[in-house]
Length: 173
Image (cartoon, rainbow, N blue to C red; front, side):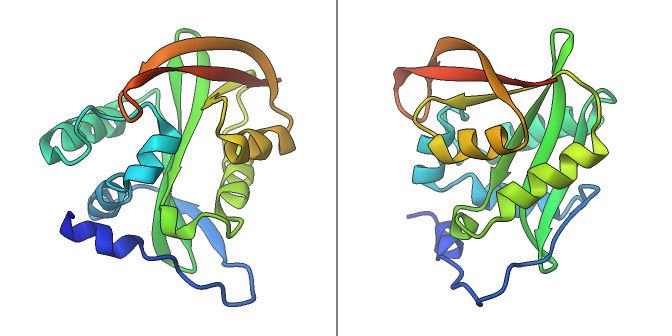
């Protein structure tokens, strides 16, 4: 087991919803993002991940490209001041596409739902697309909550699953 996986222990609910904020990505956030994407079950759900999620060099190059691309809008997601994920919009051809990753230990706490809502307030360009593996029902449900509707379907090889998967294409107009 990778030493950073110990950090994926679920955070017990406190009975109150965490305060969710978005902010610019800082260099130290990348260590947290790297730790988040090491979780095998999170990779399985995301499906389209790096061939070797533990390769920090590939991860750093990927994030350097994101952070240096002026067409990408990217934010760090914080819950009660702790870094819990990232959310971004990038260009896929002519239409921007939203993507996000949340620390698996924080799933089920309303963080993704709140972060998507905050991001959509900031990033107002429409149409905006999103993709989700067909069995990622929680992510699809969050997107639909904000008005995304299915406009297509593709199939592609998912490294994390070692198989071809069905991916839904959703769009917010």
